[in-house]
Length: 201
Image (cartoon, rainbow, N blue to C red):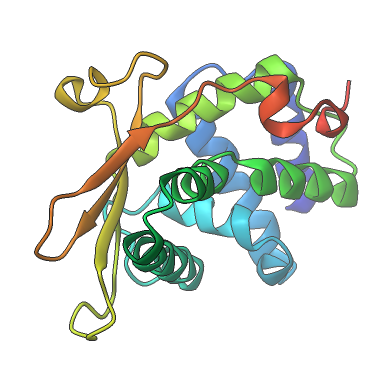
């Protein structure tokens, strides 16, 4: 089974990943490897996204709740300090996919998958992935706790939201109890976003 999955992944990657369905298939096969060898805990970000793409509303996943808790804390800090730069930088880092890239790369090394993303191929992968999760919001499991401000975190390509920004086709959206949502653009992916040293040519 492991050899079959590695063979399928190698074939897929060498042909380039060129659709949302191929991204979904790619992450599903990686998840099979992690589950088979009990390695999900070693790749928490990868496991998180592999879950996110197959659930219309991700509200039970441990990593999803960790992300939401972090977003909640940052919203509370933003309200306290009014430091917009630090807040928006934090959310942008969350969606930079840096950890996802690193974990995919490390998993490929572990299983000897003979492929490495280039800057261009990972940028394309990221855009397809964002398109998939734009239909799958992260939702807070326990909305009744008094310290909970955030109850949903999502990404969107809705024109009425995206048109507010000039640099992106997608926005992130934080839904807050008894308040207007906070949103911002998801930056286009460049070598500067991840760092040239992370790309394996």
